[in-house]
Length: 185
Image (tube, rainbow, N blue to C red; front, side, top):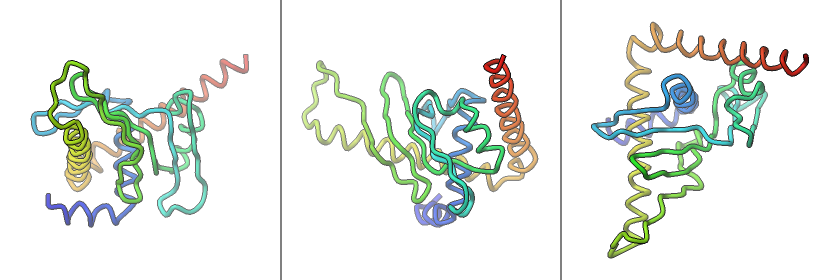
């Protein structure tokens, strides 16, 4: 997929919101494991979520700390049709981790923390190494988005993936209600 195709898709912000919400779904249902052109990458949704509607208008929900993906407010927001607008994520390959925030306005990578250089690494140019780590992250997010778009534009999206997403939301809501009942008793 050409860069102009990705830029065109990002302009349709609902696709970016669907993408980020789909990543969240994949992390919970399938462990967040992705095979991207022979690279094994893991994605984890971290401790900060911002959800909103399709058009950025109407209700918004922001959750921070305490594993917000498991909170009742997150399940309720999804059940009310809100989708992820911004989330703090971790990407990992091998023993290296990148922390970052992904914003659906433009799929910009914010607050990026690249893996630290090991003391025993003999690196000629540490800055070039960090820039390379940043480039790896950008390429990884682009590859994830392209993978999502391929699925989103296929017949499997409506037949298979949408029912799985709906089931995931129902289960999250049921768990939230069960947890609330336990706390009430």
